Length: 541
Image (cartoon, rainbow, N blue to C red; front, side, top):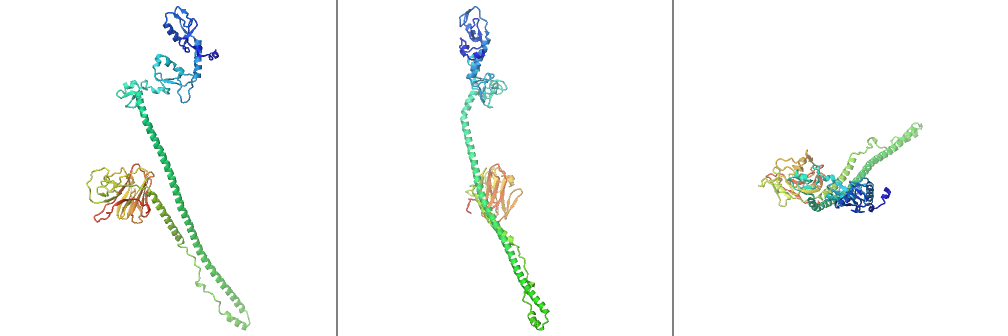
């Protein structure tokens, strides 16, 4: 039976009143079948009860009962058609909440029922008057999230104050005094903002792409710097190794030559001694032979030639002195030291040239200068005068110490500047962070935001905790200051001598850094009257 039914079409199971597949089929006494709703409405409009098909009259309204067999066959037909004509749900799609067994893809979700429906189960919402009023939307999952957790009502409004979705009861209670609009109205507002958001997101994407390129360019530049550094380093170290090898060869040759000279001297003396020994041995043999002769005449004649000893050297003053190697190694090391100093000078010169590439143009900020400081019009020079200017109060100004900052600050990367300190007997310079204390007593150490060196009376000090005394090779003329913000490095250079003075490493920078200068005080005799001068970099020095 079931097999036969599944091969029939919908026409075999259609109601002749609605012309649609039976819904709750019932059978009249005459044996014809109709939808319960269809035949009921039909008879409600008639005075006489008759069959719509055969026109048979009934004296009383028949008691209709569901045709169980036909109902089962209609369900089988509906299932067969549904499976055949409707797609099954795929991963990521919204399933029909009513389907049992094989779940079909939902085509609509009802915001009143909070249920998603396939084509088949959506049919009552398209036919029944009460269900037609329900709000249908495109299929949505987790419809329970559209209900207010507090009032179990549909979230149909938007609170502008708290920027949340609320239900009708919320607008009358917790959000009573807040501006509330329907979801659709806020949706339209937010939709209008999407263009701006998309533009902003695209801009952020482009910024990040530029940052990626910047990072890649930095890595590429670092590779080039590393390659150059490797080439320079290998070149210098190779030259040193060759010089060491040459020094070693010269040292060996010198020692060996001294040893060979001593050996040759000893060998010549030994040969001479052996020759004399041979002559003396022969004379001894002759004397022995003569002592045994009984021939008086021969004895006397031979004795005359033997009485004078053979010519020999006086060996009491002859000696072989061991060669002295004292100073041989030191002379070789002095030559090596000279070579090393030359290479180190080249390295220092190369290092200074590299940091000079990060030169920045900075000018002094008069709003920060102590009242006793005099700045040039171009902001490049500063000196001290013992006359206080009448200046307006400024929180940026130093009040106790004769310091001045530059207008420019730096929050990343590398920068370098040079300051002429010629003819000065006291000065201080370096960099300081933005938040330093400028009023009253100041402690100029890294812990307090200052990285600087101080010169006074032929003493040079890095102001750390503790302070670091620095060697002075000659009178300083110009000092270079290099900062690598990201690496936490502050370095100082003697520009004229092309010598590195000192580096503060492992520094932590978290805010802008300003170059700062202190020209030191001068007395009435004009000592230390020369200004500190921010000078342009001359890489040909």
